[in-house]
Amino acid sequence: MISDVLDVPLSPFPIARHHSIINLLNLHYINPGPSPRRTNPNVEKEFGADVSTHGMAMSEFEKTFRTGRSQEDCGVIINLKATIVTVVIKYSGADNKGLKPRSITFGLSSPADGAGVYTLVFVNEIKLDLASHTVVVNACVEPLNRGVMRIAFPVLAILRPHKIVTFDDENRAWRMLLPALAERCRRGSIQHIVNIPLE
Image (spheres, rainbow, N blue to C red):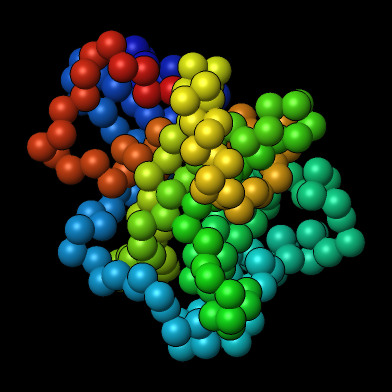
């Protein structure tokens, strides 16, 4: 919560709250409702011939920087982008030209700290954000903690989510980014409950 206009939090995706008014400080709001949906996009038409994880979201500098480096050495923003692109590609079936069933359930996984899957992402559809000339992943997200894991563990065995390995800095970034992404799609009629944390 920001009490002073100059008291900016250290989160790279800050959410400012003044009484009951919530605002994102560095992400634009979108209304995914009227946006055109692409539940099973024609890969070549929608994404072009190059559908690799290098081709969609990376700048030329990031593509060059990523070449020859391990995932851990690439940095948090490049890894966040790569994870988002992986979700889009696996959901659309772009990686296998539609020969195998596309993935709709993803598990952000952190094997380094022994936590395994720490967040589940259930993709409903891909929509076009016409104003920004990009795609938006319409998804439900379930962060997993010990209480939820007792219930979710049998379901995970059935769902078999596509695991995406993330490292410590990216894990922390996802925990800051997910509330901001949820907030950016909120419409004015939804009210926040005061005792529910935004971080």
